Length: 202
Image (cartoon, rainbow, N blue to C red; front, side):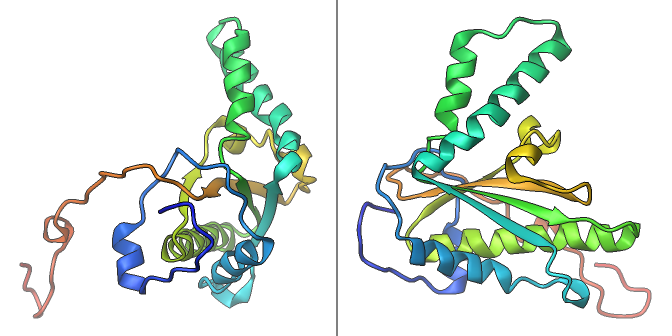
């Protein structure tokens, strides 16, 4: 990943194997049409009965300031639970996090009263998120999906104007990066069981 205006593109398997969570970003802006391309990739995720449960909320430039109150509210809430005071340093860090990448995308979902449908919608949203992350990697961009209290406890709900049937799923940080990534995966054989014959377990 580098600071460039070129449009690289990697094949799917390469993108899958090279995608990593990136937390250090360059301030370089990303053209809106590039972001729209990633959102379109997300939109092609599998979703049962084509419910299209995802909603994308894109924050760039000064628009990121809208997220500060939610992030800081989550910090205060977590401190109160522990009976601890909130320092200015912690609040300033929460603010800085909202500006740590040139693009922040919050994915929310439309829930359903039926438990199975709701579960399917939640899973579909994460499929959409993975599509976006892989498309970003293929295009030479870094990304990082995040949750935390401000997402899990829905502090962003008022910022996004979510209805009672909607809830946030994840926050995606997006941008160019020069961060070195070292994360690896264990061999897939350690987590795989093959069933090739009736009654046979290998």
